Length: 264
Image (tube, rainbow, N blue to C red; front, side, top):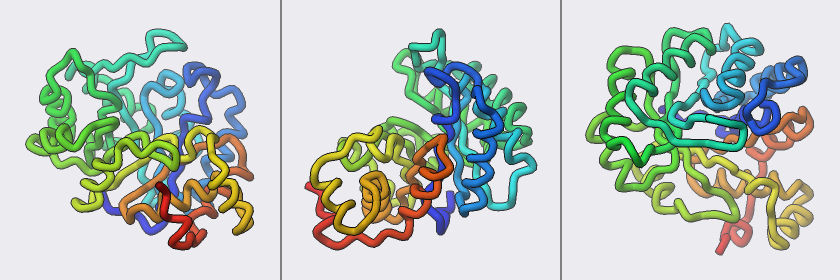
């Protein structure tokens, strides 16, 4: 996956209904946010088959299809939603292939730009799960393969079967447990897409102090910090607000000093 010049993307999960289970209630407002994201230069939109039980993908197509040149729509499969409270990994190869077909239909495309294994299913051999994505890529139904919430060791195992273009792991100012994966992605020039990039709105006194000193919001500092961590980092903050969207995108222009980058 080519690392775009504009590295702040958009995570569409926040546009779903309650519990990320129901359909988006205000579709007009949600479509406006998606269109404004593209107008602001966003070239990477992230969704999943499980967001709104597929409704999130349909919403993106309603707002943006036919897609502008250079826009990457990333989606995922491998998380089932048996009810509004549960997210259960499901990596059976036949299920992953079915979900890819449904994503193609909902997004109105012949090939998925970037298709992730959303979670590793501990009850299915890892090679079978990755193998399903490799087959989809070989068939031309998927352009590039991604993995989510994986270790460096799992990455190495997966790449015996298929090139992995992107990794989407939890990583932010407050949680750096996947630092080894970020370092691996940096060395191999592989996109690292941190989910929950602003730590769900949680921040500490130091983040607040930096924001106050340079005249921006704590969320903007958290995003700028991520962008400075590595040139392969592609954060995907989500929002329902046009104002917050503009603030998130503007974080790409914030320069942080050496002391501000030195996060212990």
